Amino acid sequence: MSSFRQKNSFKIRKRNGRFPLKSFLIFFFLVLLAIIGPWLYPESLSQITNETLHPPSLRHIFGTDIHGRDLFIRILFGARISFTVGLSGSLISLFLGVSYGAIAAYAGGKIERLMMQIVDLLYSLPVLVFVIVLIALFEKPLRTFLYQAHFNYLLPYSRIILLLVGLGLVEWLTMARVVRSRVLVLKESLFVQASKVLGQNSLNILLKHILPNLAGLVVVYLTLTIPTVILEESFLSFLGLGVEPPSSSLGSLLSDGANAINPVKISWWLLFFPGLYLSLTLWSLNVFGEWLRDTLDPKTRELS
Image (tube, rainbow, N blue to C red; front, side, top):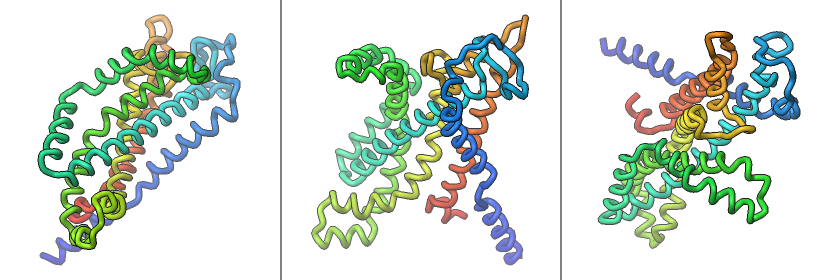
């Protein structure tokens, strides 16, 4: 009986640990399209034609929008912005979460309690409301600063800059908690205690011994945070609070598609294809992130 259980559990571990090749290839293909597509068709985004609201065809595989622009090219441009916001916001949250959690855990005592109470307080704030308030308060000052600093080429992207900063500022809280818990364990380990005995200061111990042991956790968190940030950006853009025209993201394309649906003529492709691209992106990233978590996270690996 025990041998059957061991054999069965081995099969379960083997199946669950299999590399998700399908989701990885789908995500790689979607990212590759977003990178090279706009280079192949640099003029198509602003090209307005008389072929308005044409359904999918051999000439326009995803159809055209209300201005006659090719929807496939618009989706590739929009995906590039969504990926940029997702990756940049995740990197900001990663830096804040790792730094904050590691310092809190290593400091200990009253400093740790105070820092984690601040995290608990921030957790009670609505995430998207914070980003909306940030955009409302700082968009005009940011535009003024960019103009006075002669960064005029960044003026059309001021909303995008605030989006990636705002989403990064609200997504670091979970990482701070997870890192704190891991550092509390690591700082009691033998190699850290030996470093203290040898006279190494706290900064050296953090940088040379503790942070390198968080690499697997950091990679897992980054992979799982990117789809979250992309989804939040898409939701804000869908509401008209994110990326502004003439720029577009997957969320703003979904908003355009929803507005184009009416009882007279249902241009279904304007909503279906951006939604499909976004859904495939989120699904493939989540599946790949879960595989990384099961593979690299020591706690998950021990439980298996």
